[in-house]
Length: 76
Image (cartoon, rainbow, N blue to C red):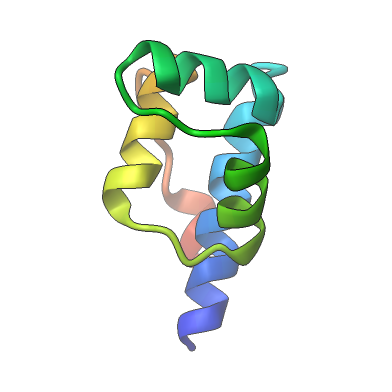
């Protein structure tokens, strides 16, 4: 059950990045500019595992410019 939610969360973040055409390198640069140093490789590893914290998710969403988040797709 937990891995199912991890996969959904990972998909949510990857979808937001894809919609904005932001790759891991650019995300790393944006996070670093916000005072949250991350490498492209570290981001790729964290996101591929899907077991990241809510704090990390919010940091990434803010860094990529998300204004809102739809959770409808997560429950289906």
